[in-house]
Length: 463
Image 1 (cartoon, one colour):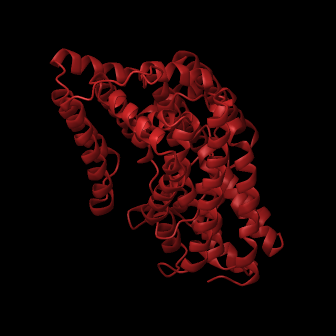
Image 2: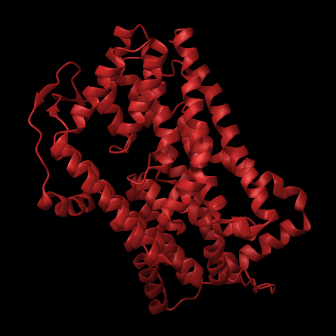
Image 3: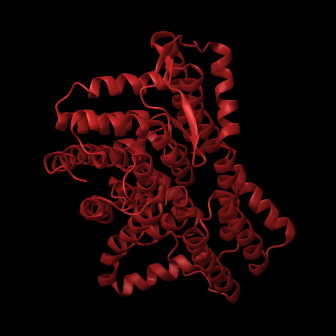
């Protein structure tokens, strides 16, 4: 199953790389001038110079995944460590034993199950809105999938709770320093300006995302066979021993492993919020967790290391997919078509009615998000161009910031070129085409919602 998933998705992503390379032979080239400011490389508005495209041939197409691997090494190491750590925890038997007791608890108190999804989605949405949780959702995917299965749901629900919960918060960013903070600074807006409207957006975004997940979860709990990942989950339940009625012995070593695991999650949240931990620090935390869990679970050194290697090895297919996804940005940048695409979009937007122009900014941000997945990176690329453009159109710069954050939050979770999206799906073992088909109704809804939510800022001149 894993091999088939990795191969099919890998072929699809590499086809995208080839298609982008073909675009370098067809699209006009050009570049913006750039300047260093506050540790970021910003484009200079009105500095675009048309130039020759640098067509990317077969050699560049072959090199793109290699360059993508190098540019993505931090997130790849992170995936290897996360995969290894959870395999160690699984080998201790603590996960299966704890999950069965959790399922037994909810079986005795079914009235509490209804709160599981809304409470957890809101928590992740707050994290996405306040401190920009994105890559940090990856470990939680491996936590919530077994939880969802134990409660009678499926892997899609377990993946959606942390990943789409944080995405809903991203789209309704309030204090998110990686989206609102950087974008407003580049747009020369006061910090926390427009907060009231973004709070309203957060409520709408989180409520709609919660409703989407809950409606699907209720349908799957009623008839598990309707799940697109039904066969996959049968194998997963077998691996986690969730398909057996007998309760696993809950030994002291299991309790200690789960206690340390819980403390590690608390440390993760504290470290991100207090000390601004990112991928390297979180990976080190989970590496320490793997060692500690293995020792407390009484695994031998051979068992511990073999389990860690097995878990890390399972991430190799995902790593290749992410490397290819990053290769699309390499090709677009080296071919000199990324800046020309931004300039062309800005030129089209400048001739539209203000409401249509605001909506077109959202579409433009979503399109460029196909190549640039870093929130701060995309802000540095687009906001120096979009912010002055609003002055010409009679829009507020706050509107440009909103269009930017909608593209980040509501479009990113389905993009096959996003390292985070493909990393999450890889950890979940869910093929991208299955995820996309499942997400499509919600994606259409949120696309229309974004267009509608951009109308009031234009009418009321949101500052």
